[in-house]
Picture 1 (spheres, rainbow, N blue to C red):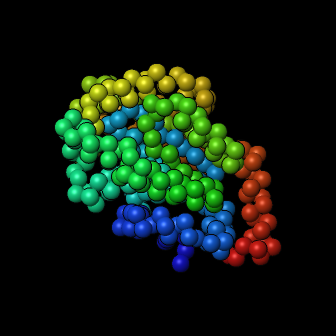
Picture 2: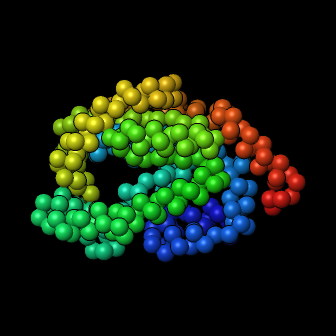
Picture 3: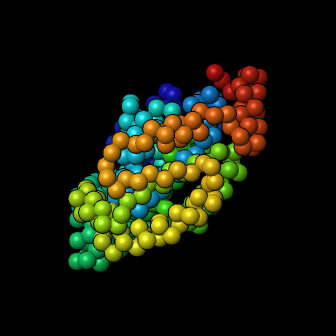
Length: 272
């Protein structure tokens, strides 16, 4: 069974909590297969960060830019794999009979349940984060291309993620999806997973404060999308982002990794 089949979106959704144990039990043979597939994978060693406030439309913009949804819903047309704990979190909520729309109400009316969902070790949010972290480790092991779908309110967290990716050999890019606060609040109230209003305001404010820092961090590999009004992604941004994915790897660590992986494959240490 190929790795791509193993980690396909349907399996991840249908076996949300059992998948983590299965992935952790993978042995050397599957790891070598991962390297074998990864070395010629589209988008290898390219890491794209999607940032922006809650309800800014990051996931929808990622779909338009990279063609996510053509085939597996978490894999782009260029081979990038989406890393987003929100998908696992929402699946976990539904598994326990909790509607994502009720989160804002639960925070206000049932603090004990809110803490169990979002804060305690082993809770739904904690399990979703651990599952996503495990999934990401296997992508990194094969240096597969990734789309890190987050928010952008924690500058140091993204800085740390970028540094780690670069040490593994990845080239990094960021697409920052922006909206007005008014629109963010309106969309939040109407989406499936409703966040507390004060949380949306705080996160939006912090994202705005970090925008200039992200520009400095990513330099020429940084684009901003104004998504205050829903519209198709600007062709120039789509073209620039996909050009980044298709360009030869610049990171010297990544170039060396590919050379070594190809040498192992050629010598027969990694089966074709």
